Image 1 (cartoon, helix red, strand yellow):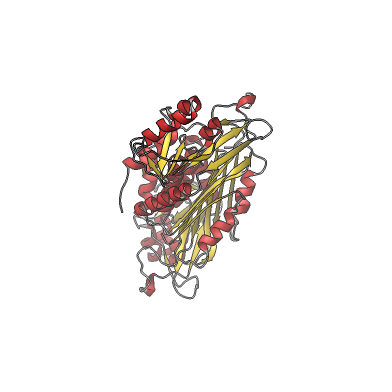
Image 2 (cartoon, rainbow over the protein chains, first blue to last red):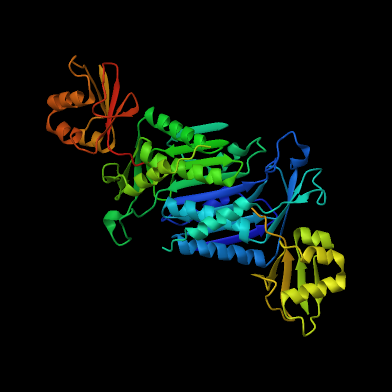
Amino acid sequence: MRSLKISIQQQDFSIDDECAAMRAGHKDIGALATFTGLVRELDDMGTASSARQSVSSLYLEHYPGMTEKNLQEIAEEADQRWPLLDVVIIHRIGELKVSEQIVFVGVSSMHREAAFAACAFIMDYLKTKAAFWKKSNSGEGKENDGHWVEAKKSDTKATEKWAETKQKR
Amino acid sequence: MRSLKISIQQQDFSIDDECAAMRAGHKDIGALATFTGLVRELDDMGTASSARQSVSSLYLEHYPGMTEKNLQEIAEEADQRWPLLDVVIIHRIGELKVSEQIVFVGVSSMHREAAFAACAFIMDYLKTKAAFWKKSNSGEGKENDGHWVEAKKSDTKATEKWAETKQKR
Amino acid sequence: MVTVHYFASIREKLGLSSEQVELPTQVDTVDALAALLIEQHGSAWESVLKKSSVLVAVNQSVASFTSSVTNEDEIAFFPPVTGG
Amino acid sequence: MVTVHYFASIREKLGLSSEQVELPTQVDTVDALAALLIEQHGSAWESVLKKSSVLVAVNQSVASFTSSVTNEDEIAFFPPVTGG
């Protein structure tokens, strides 16, 4: 891994700015995979007709110090598995409204297989290993009006799958 | 698939503009995966010390009419496999210099698994099923100074893997 | 003194984000610390810290209830993570 | 008349990107068309169209050398694709 940027921030980010920064001055990047997670209006159980499951905002909390360490370890684990060039992980915290960006993972590599796999790997691990907690607010967006989101079994399974398929390069 | 944009063009593209267009007016997007392919200075066989394998530019040719049809079919096949929202496929043609963007694939979905898988699927199929040809120029970037890139077995294998793992939803 | 942090739903249920606690010599594991906290604070702490899903970190690394703790350590209790 | 397109390395080797050819009645497959083109153009076409890696499309759909062709069809010969 040539470079690693980890940022936990309240303010929004620009996918272009991040991609431009990853590309700047480099002639060896063949593949750039990105993932952006956004606040969806409906939570996983919901349909539009069910008012209780409509989301107006999320509140994101983290553990300063530990979260950064978690993300660093996740990026390093990805770097051990695939030949990576540049990695960017940005996660927003605080109050985020519907359609806002929550998380960005960008991975550059010489080839697309590594970029795709590492990007998906980092997201799966971020979901299950990084100290973030998400509250879903259904009403007017007040902090205490919602419910804390439960961890999903599908996320744990996605992470376990990577553990099984671990192939050192 | 709610929307599909396919564009074969000479001019550059902006990842942000494409992502913004996919997001505009929608509250149901939870995941947005993108892939950008770039012109690398070194081809697959090369090291920096080998002048013959250093790339100064690529020349991209396509089959007007058939290429668009190929990409449409690839996107539709992806849409049959995963629950997708918006798909964008942009491929540049003509002379492209080192570090320039060649191809963009953007996929939005409610969940990240579908977005990631469909984005990787579309790239793998684009590499082996869409009527594009690439010439690698090593010298001053003149069109006839280089060699036509050979199809890679690794790309064929990547495509075959999807055929084996086909799971209709 | 150990610093104890509480996050997310646990922080909200307890109405407390962190506190400092002087460890008696016999309190040398997370388990013993949890028992001490329950003794000091009562039933709200009991309902939270005895939940099977509660996770713990010692000095910002994931740990277990059998992990040892000493004064100067930073302990955190939190529910399963849900970022991204 | 069929329209025949040549792409990429094939186009360069032949120095031709497309041509129109009137099909005699007995020429009703890609194979027969290729033989006709070789007969008309000579060895450059033979070296290109007899290569095992050459691919063919009929009316912009991937086809094989046994596929049938009729006048009005659009035929293309090209090497394996290398986009992306």
